[in-house]
View 1 (cartoon, helix red, strand yellow):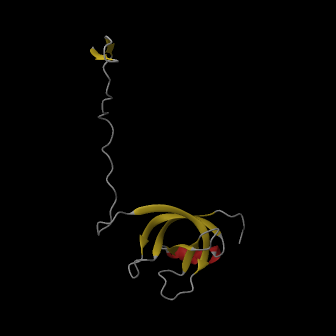
View 2 (cartoon, helix red, strand yellow):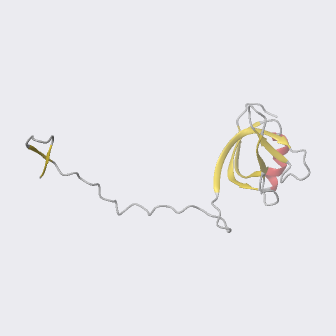
Length: 127
């Protein structure tokens, strides 16, 4: 037992030793951040917004995800599956929840793009 004085001039009071938790050897090692071939970290995000068609010919995609309230561009939507590209036309003007890898366009480093992994409509309209 360790003794420690409370105040100068008063007798020492015994204290109990602090117990330290032991590491569990059965736990997996900490995960390493996922990086792309250039060494940049890969960001997997989920965004909610309204799908619109882009008007710019220099845009990285034909579709853009806009903020629900402000209408500002969140991300340009990149599809890597031909069937999803066909379905995007039906999603114009609809509210969606989309997740995937977020990155910057290779041609313009100020243009955010989202490579679609999953997509779900959140409005209740049947178009």
